[in-house]
Amino acid sequence: MENDDQILKMCDIPAVPMVAMKVLKLVDSQNTDVDSLQEVIMADQSLAARVLQMSNSSFYGMGRNVDTISDAIVLMGFNTIKNLALAVSTKEVYKKFGLLEQKLWEHSIGVSVAAGLIAREIRVGPAEEATVLGLLHDVGKVVMNNSQPERFSMLTEMVYNERVMYTDRERSIFGFGHAEVGGIFAHKWGFPNHLCDSIRRHHFGSYDDLLDLEPRTRALCCIVALADSLCIRLGVGYRGPMADLPLRDSEYMQLLKITEDRMAEIIERFKMAYIEEKLSYQM
Ligand SMILES: [Fe+2]
Ligand SMILES: [Fe+2]
Image (tube, rainbow, N blue to C red):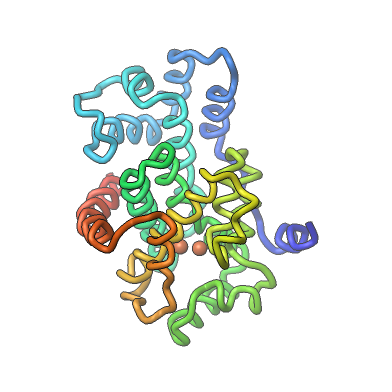
């Protein structure tokens, strides 16, 4: 695509970290066993710690003490481990860690937690898929910021000063949007197609625009859009609450058939879970 060429010229899409690549390859091959997957995970301290921590966390709800990587693999399943490897690797994409990057990271964690809670509530597909999608939905912003920091900070200032969404101004500054950049990133990292599509389409105009996608991908787009609105409203990963922006949460709630009452409960659960999740990354 023409736009993709322009993006690749302006943005440096990072390579997949070695450990994630090995896990992806192993999980995708037909004859993988627990031992070989364990070996790869054990070779990477931060991934090993995260697998153990997640398999024991109340968020993943395994309900028992898991103290070996092999038990964690058996309990969580190969696909969850694959998603976890991608999630852990994401942090490496954040080259610098200033205030702007900190906010982008917090926003990703927030949307990831909210998307997981929403997916659990409506029970469409595995919830950890929505969790990983939440973590990665705005990865395009990180890539744009790493590649063109001045331009990206100008965009961010516009968002705050003019009280607009990133999507309202990014095209005039970059010539393309962060969702497209994220889509290219996801494709290059070998994500499953439905995750690539949901990252690329998470700022859809109307539901009709999603009709070419599979129902599961459509649901993921709506889940992440609702989780995103929730976080923007509360100011998660922003300098403060941005409730005055034209958020479309009620439209997404309708699409996902979530009532106001259920949403209020999700928001309450979110506040606790977000703090817990954010702390877990600081370990
Ligand atoms: Fe976004
Ligand atoms: Fe977002």
